[in-house]
Length: 368
View 1 (cartoon, one colour):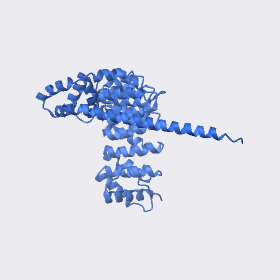
View 2 (cartoon, helix red, strand yellow):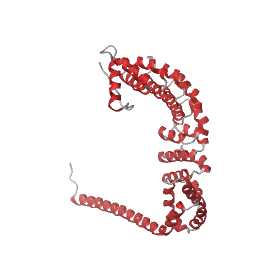
View 3 (cartoon, helix red, strand yellow):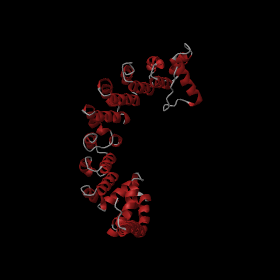
View 4 (cartoon, one colour):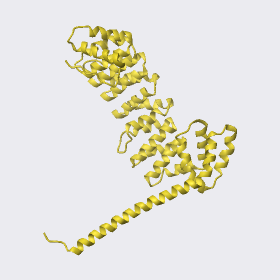
């Protein structure tokens, strides 16, 4: 191995040290500039911030005058005050929020944010989407729907959340479509947004039950259960009985338990069959407990001896939720032939009830 000249090594180390020092100075400089800018904005906005607080607390007959005074401030002061206004939008409700929305509209914040949705920089697009959602600005819905396919993931998430806050039902199909493709939005974000759209969006959500994508169908049925769409019980029952995807059927069973409609009893009992996947049987048993139908006592009692401990535990907890009749069935099973899986599962469930009630998040697993 040929040794490098000492001068060359020393020069390289000095260059590296200089580069590190320059980077450190740059970082420090950026922090100093940001701190100075923040303090300057706070100093400029301080006198007007008092008026802003008065606006939020003022009665109706005084709000108009205060709104006019704040809306007339110069651009430099508004730039300093605007971050405070936008941060308050997500913290207040009622008349106070309405006053802030009117203030932002009069200062042109909504129009500026709408223009920023087409910005070349992702952070700017994301901030604009967030502000438009906070303002509930319905004219922005078409542009926000287009951003569901944005190349930046954070922008897509901001657009989905903004659509949920705005609550325009026309966004439902686009939100469902954002679940698949090259640029997707996570299911939890889409579910939350769809849940916020209100009952007028339910036709668009129901249409998702016919989508070729299992994920779209699963989210659609989850939203129907979460929003308490009892009028859509027949569509959910059809999904439980006919959908080829197990996850969709599981979510349909859970939705029927949440809705609590009598029409869910028969399909949920059918889902307990031994030929069904264990995960579906377990969720169906829990849903029957949520349904509160004492007619489910017999099929749930049969599951106490199931070979799958998860299914048997879910059946035991469901029986406890059925009230006196379900508890009586558990006691009868516990007093039955000793040494059986059903008797052990029933005793475990009753013991759990005795020490502090039914804990639906804990699996009582009995092995013999």
